[in-house]
Length: 171
Image 1 (cartoon, rainbow, N blue to C red):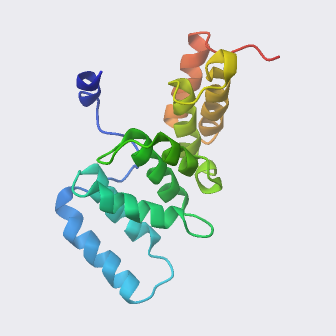
Image 2 (image 1 turned 45 degrees about the vertical axis):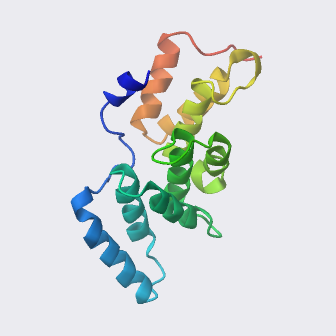
């Protein structure tokens, strides 16, 4: 239901989504940081990528920045989740669920409540399937993991699944 989807409020994650009018300043901050050779320009890169993607300015450029963050040795957790989300949902780029899933399953993404929530969503909606239960058991486990860290969406989905009796019985 594409039309109904468009009526939904803006995505709640990432929590900071700089407006398009901030792009020039974000670019300057990132370029200055990298020119000085600073060790930690990650947050500036993440904010710039988020501005590119979530304002639909240049999603490909934003995805490239997210991937750079994700593909580092230790991986930037939010950059890793963001790369997965952009690919799975096709946010301004062609949908590539398999590539997005690889990012969401990386250790960096799994360390975050948002990464767990996104994987839970993929199981819950059937993008990933885990046998007879259609992925509900896996979805519930990932939602519980995100909820245990205080993730509001994870808490909501745990409650929703309990209320709707969608939790498969343990073997």
